[in-house]
Image (cartoon, rainbow, N blue to C red; front, side, top):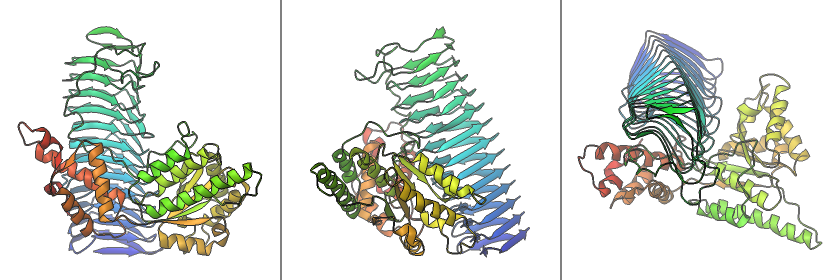
Length: 622
């Protein structure tokens, strides 16, 4: 309908209507800017509004509705400001926000009435979203924030009538909610895995099935929050989840107030439970192997059934483990496990070192990537034989350890980088082998001199490990001009030589863009030993990923579902938005949501009803 593209291009629309467009309603790309005031965008065949490559858009008093795809999709450092704007009746995401440096600021906006099975607000790959005085309601999921560096800040906002999870935080992302209200959701907030966290401060969670879930090493801070009338549990912590709950209150729970199992090291301080049907606090260990010092840390907590409470001082549980309610996690989509395993905190070493054989075994277990596995094994063999030759008093061939990874998103580049660092640590080549992931926004400053400082700081964090630079080609844009990316490249080239024994650098990105990047920067190209290409997954490999997800989350594929999935992955568009492994996992999550909607209508579902995924659970092709 409306397009603005190219630096210096600008578009202003006031009181306009954009509708019945074959494609996107509004498209702003290539550093163009646009302002829309009191406009309607509706009945498109594609996304309502798209932003890409440093685009800047302001929407004030606008209405975006009846969109079959994403209402608003923005990527590649685009910036969107929404004020008093409504987004409704969208088939995929209301706001879809991707990539480091991409940002949405929404004030007094309303996002509601989803017609699909996708989160209303999706923030990933290092993007940022800020919602101030907003309402998100009548949607499958309200906020999904995932990937390290991704962040959502929500202030004085309402999230309600959410069929699944109101706030989902995974893969190292962060969510900060202040003075918010979360009502009538299956789960109020779910912090899913290692590195994922943030803060809920002075929030009210009312009438949800479960108020807060913390699992798999996630470590949020929940402070001065009230969970009222949960139908299953106020707070549920399991599978190595942590979390700190300070001055929190659970009232009127139909189950437990605080339910902490598996010996999770959760902190409860000055918390209070009232009128919880099964008890205010339930602590249960993880069995005979639970460490002596595991279990919750409890201080000054009370419940109306007792005047005080202390955590278990020994491996024995305070009370027997209660049977988990079958619906506690059952109707919520499983954790999004990507090829990006939870990233290791930049300042910390990984868990106790494994042998290179064990790490290579994990590499071999990944779906597909046969050529990648051969390349990594060949490199590992070269390094190992070199060490043996040195011990035998022989000369060892010099092996450059810096690598280039090329390929589409979702093909496992970050996971392989993490495993590569662990392999080098197991061989004694690196001290720690931890992974520090950065992109242009982490390395390039706003003024002369600041870029070199940022780049040096990134190297310092990666000392003894791997510095993974995603979308490295963004450091050398085609229309660079006076861009500070060149300063980052010059600093990188010098540090890669000066610290070649203590830091391994991996640069990654799309194949064509990385080829251009290396060709225009011969100084960078000379520092790398080899390029490893990550091919797109085929339909059979995508099917295997779904099968793994189903097995992990205790689902089964009914007869005919595997064939339907293969056909689905054969026909799905393979354009720039295709996410490979991520697409497979999103497909599984969509199937679980559709399965839940179907089974929820059954009065007395059988085990097969609760576990079998049928071809009709597949979402429509995008």
